Image (tube, rainbow, N blue to C red):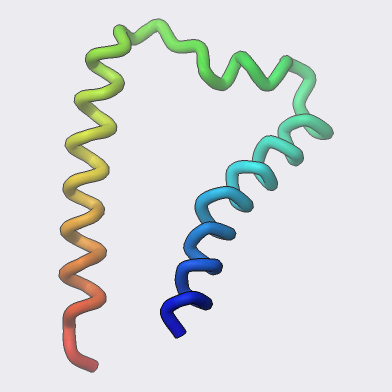
Length: 68
């Protein structure tokens, strides 16, 4: 069970971004590199990502530990 769950986790981690990039490749006129360009400073982006990732991680943990 644990190996299967790990495989599904890797599929989610790798598969969904690849699927999204594939869709953008075929249906977007701009190059895909434009996704990674931003006018916001990198430290601001990292701070927002760290805060939102922590918040969502604890929220997900709270949800999965709830009894049915």
